Image (cartoon, rainbow, N blue to C red; front, side, top):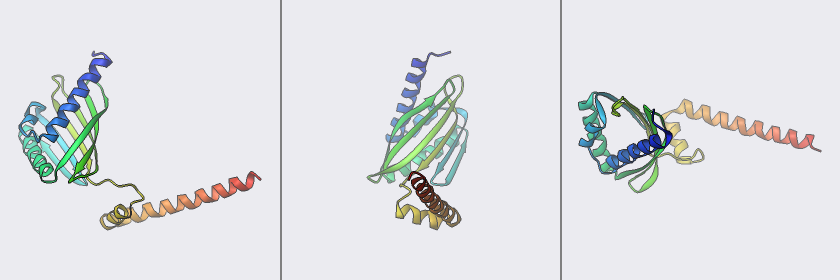
Amino acid sequence: MTNTRELVARATAFVAEAERMTNERDVDGIRAVFASDGHQSAVLDGLLIESHGIDEIHRAWGLMCAFMEKRTMFVDKSLVTADETTIVNEWIGTVAGKRAARGIEVWNLDREGLVVDQRVYAFLDARPESSPVQNLRMLLAHPLTATAFARAKLQASQSGAQRFTATKAGAR
């Protein structure tokens, strides 16, 4: 069993290497990270990209690197948590000069430290819930979800106002 300090140091170095590979578009470096029978699943703003085996993963990573280069995307990754077989990191990214991308990655490792499964969840233009642009995008892409969220938000604000009024009245 690895002590905590060594575990954190190893996981931090792994995340730093993942950041370097991303920002330098190191397509071939992916072969040294994944097991030959590895699996990668990426959800990119709702687009699901699945890859099985090192050759598919290599092709998918090449496509992702080409995309990131075209959009001038760079990321800053930081360790969230780790144990002997799992590393979780989050990242904040800049796409075409706008720092609004966000993501999280979960890496599962085998006994040799190679990735057997990676899950990526990425949002390239995350905005606060108060953003009119984001609310319009959500309404156009997912009208039922956007409407349900707006109704719940309105209901919560009204019930909060009623609770505040009742509490205030009881305090007199």
